[in-house]
Amino acid sequence: MKPKTILDLQRMKSAGEKITVLTAYDYPFARLLDQAGIDVLLVGDSLGSVVAGYDNTLPVTMEEMIYHTRAVVRGTTNALVVADMPFMSYQVDCAAARRNAGRLIKEGGAQAVKLEGGATIAATIAALTAIDIPVVGHIGLTPQSIHRMGGYRVQGREDVQAAQLRADARAVEDAGACAIVLEGIPAALAAEITAELTIPTIGIGAGVACDGQVLVIHDILGLCEKYSPKFVKRYADVAAVISESAQAYINDVKQGTFPDDEHSF
Image (tube, rainbow, N blue to C red; front, side, top):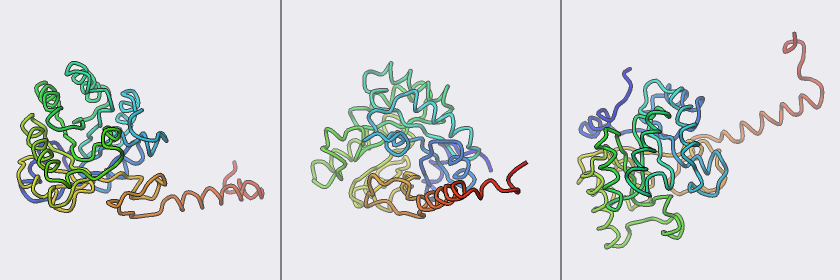
């Protein structure tokens, strides 16, 4: 199997083939998801919440993103690896955005970067694509904007807001993005945007009409107890397996039944 590229994502949209995306933050998860056949691995700044234990994504640093991206790339053979640009790594000016995006590609090994925002960030997207850095956009519920939005709220329910999201999507595409994440918007609006754009749309809480879907791996495995968004489908309860295994180990050690002869030299 040949490694996925941004050209494959465009081909998949044209062919009507759904694009599968999951987050990964380390080598073992990346290896397992890659072997399972995932199309895209997103090294999301969601690691702030599900790995580092922050209240939100805002504290995540460039150094953290580079570290986790490197680990994911080492575990990946076939999937396209996209890395999030953390808060304030691209908002200051285009020079900082180019420098930080370049680090995620050069030092982290990512094949594309993702940043949040629509029309207001279009110039930054254009600046990155001008130096051959593939960019995935992200509009709708943008976690780095939670203070402006007043929390994690569905976006685009009102006509004015929906019109702005359509304009944002077009601006992201016109700026040269290779794909766009649509998060937390009504399914009907996401379907309209998907039909209007030539680049693939990746939905998260945006309905089935998007060209692909992304979820946080810890959410689908039951490893995150902080929140449970409506759009998350839990496919396993790995937390219970880990807890039971740890308790069994503790009991064995306390009772002196581990290590036994089989596990000793």
